[in-house]
Image (cartoon, rainbow, N blue to C red; front, side):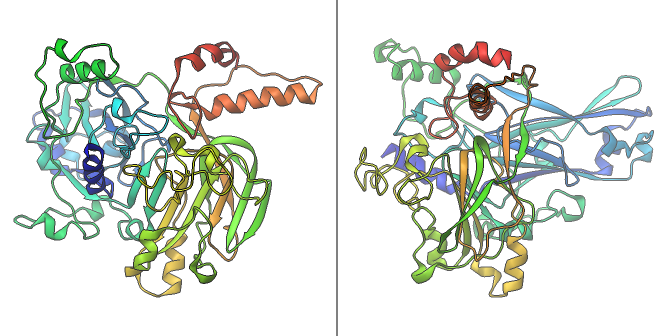
Length: 511
């Protein structure tokens, strides 16, 4: 029952929000009033849970990596990054407060990451041991003048937050490290430019949020993150779950909590490079699997996602509306939305030639598929919070949707599907990817290999192709599992394990 309650709350928090703040010319002039020195630097300091990306005036500041901040125990510490935005504030020329005329908008896109993940407390991972809560951000801008005076603006804390910040539901309906991402391309199109001053609108007073929350681009004042769980309470709860403490030995008072949200740890500077796309790979082969399904083979395993340089073509509905296993999307089909699905995997079913989803099933949750007998068919029918449209196997899958409300104009739908580029806040372990369902395979498709952007210092080569292949195999494995911290595997578990890290550290240090 507890998991089902958490699942209901989790669904209420979909779609994922967009945050933005207005840094107006008037605000800058007021903050710098009395300080007639030149502005020499502007540093935006920010972090967000689970993952975030930040922009200013529509220009991305973050790397395009899907996991930031790096994975830590977020109830103990959360890493932040700083971004130099001096050129935006000063327009690349000496400027005093009386010369400021331009306003700016800071935009933050957030996703679930390891913080607000789907509450699946079964399988290989004990999600209940991880800290969790609603997505949240912390940010402020430091402006320094030529004599060393530092001014702080657009904070996300205290009553001043309401003066600058707004929040709205964004185009990402769902983003999960194990089930993939669902993107509403209709919302993406309608909210184009949301992080620019030209799109800024003041929030109307005395308007009911409940009556307007379904509207695209409806902005409200965000609320401060709050919880009644202290760090001491959480530490004791974890110790009891790990059988390191008896219930009667706890020092804090045990009670049922009104708010299911973990405490957030102290902010510390980021200690490692961000996760970034480190390699772009073209497919070796593209196969027609029938019913509008296309199989892309990239020739080697990696962690990342597909990138569509030219977007996606318009979808088709398979004969008799029978989607290939794993590619159906019941929620969209029921209301007439158009959609395209992408499924990822690192091996194929030898009898059918399509992707073996069972071997890469998220947290090991599957129903055996058509040929695997380790689990009976229907094994996940009663797993709490299991996605209803995954055909019994928790698949690595991304979905791009154009709502029925767009209308029947085929040209408009085609234009909106062409906006699709890639998933944003999830990665998949794969060599193969299936795209379904389209008349022709999407053009200009590449795979992006993501990993922590550390330098590769070692190399190896020999006259023996088998030994060289072994080296590449190990190198690919390390790259695929280096997503902020080394993980056990890039699909089923994704969590760091000390044993793997110790065993492989000599190899990693050489590479």
